[in-house]
Image (cartoon, rainbow, N blue to C red):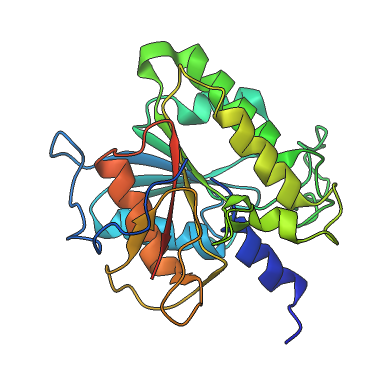
Amino acid sequence: MPIRAANLCSMLLTLAVTVLPATWPAHAQPAQAGPSGQPLHILVYGGTGMIGSRIVDEALRRGDFVTIVVRHAQGVAPRQRLTVLQGNVLDGVQVEHQIAGQDAVIEAVRASISSPPAAQSSGSAPPRRGGAQVPHFYRRVAQILVEDSRALGARAPRLLFVGGATTLEDSNGRPVLDEMPSVPKTSEFYTIREALEYLRTVHDVAWTVLTPPLQIAPGTRTGVFRLGGNRLIRAADGSSHISAEDFAVAMLDEAHHPAHVRARFTIGY
């Protein structure tokens, strides 16, 4: 069946990340507060997207204080314990101020965003939504977040990234991306891999990558799933999927109870 470009993006945004055996037990009860027993202050980049919005919902459900950074704040509905900032994750100066004072920062943005716009007069129109893909986007985002975290020293938050499924190994031990010869080297799937490779060289900042399986889509929050390491998790019927709601549960569990610091892990049914 043909795959629409938007769906392919969603599938492969769930494809990139250090992994553990896919035979771990099913997920236990979700955490309700941070390690200290207190709600977390969490900043989410891409908090209005398909995955990011579920992460925001899950964090608010647990009583966390959430800040989202979006390019266009208009139209974001007000919610209790939710703060909305307008900004751009590629603007390192903005990012350093935004992440200060947070317990965790979750990066769930998509590659099709523009570089920071030039200064505009008060009467000019806002930048257009969307934009051309930024070269090496995910690596640049990872570098900005890491460098700004270093600048904060001991006050730096944990960094959690939504990975991409193409960086996982399939059952044959080969990376999924290597089995897609028609994908151009300029594709966002390669910059997702670049970001993971870069993060694996970082040993002085607390980062984690949670990589989705081949398919991630809106669905049901079951709280029951498997976690793994570098290998793609497949169900008994061969499918590789997770609901965005359960992906958010796993992400927030990791934020509340760190178990994969400076590592990548994955999820699936």
